[in-house]
Length: 335
Image (cartoon, rainbow, N blue to C red; front, side):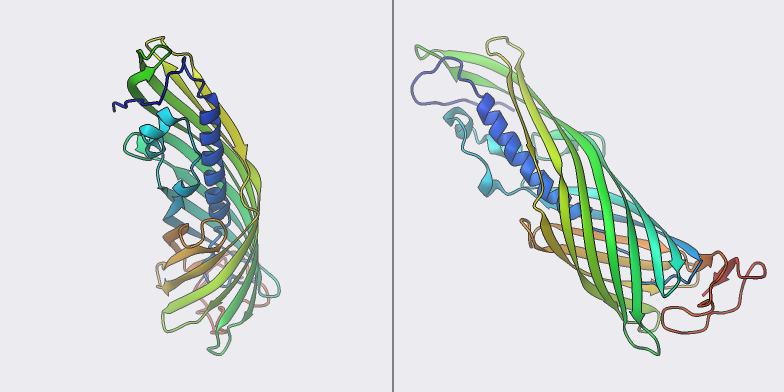
């Protein structure tokens, strides 16, 4: 794209490093808050796992990470005139692939490990003029306790969660134009802009979910609270290939807002070959409330793997399970 720099008066090769630094401060802060919400997403299908048994689920989702342009910094007039903030997106949609490996514990509890991957497609576009490639991974764990849910009553599930999100993203764009210099002459520039982002974010969360079985359907809803720590680093450099202007650089580091909360909702459909579920989370407390969201759909296997404990033979509604097993003790038990 071609940009035209316009600036009142005359300046000699203005130093725009501070402007780049301010932009990176804004970008790292916006990304930190978005990742803080993303790190708190820990959806677990509303299904109770029997003591000493194991099951797994897999889901694919998409999330929205907003960038608040109202907080974009004031820049040098030459950058303001061309609307440099339009290089950056108003929001970013990102994919998410998540897997849980869950094990049943005594006293109607279960424990799960969580693995998630977010990889952008090649030459992913953040805006019309900004492309990039990156990857983010998440590892975590969840401890749940189930209450009620017998004789047709709702199931109440409490969860304590921890997630660690880490990743990086590289992006690039370019512009050409004329920059006023001393004496009123114009200096042509041809700038190649590149940048890198990197993050390490930790989330400690508590969820409370209510679910109710209606035939094969289990709708659910609840709330989640997360305390978030970590850092996001952002850097950007512009190189003038014409050699008329020296490199422009900026870098900044920001942390996420410490507190956020989300509303959680969805449903699970139980079938003999797979249990299908979908869920959504939207931020209701935090800097991106009402704008940051995640939606997922996936399936969990409708059987347990492992030897049963004293609660074997019942699911979360108290119903008896069919006594189908592959060897004595119930190595695999279908429900």
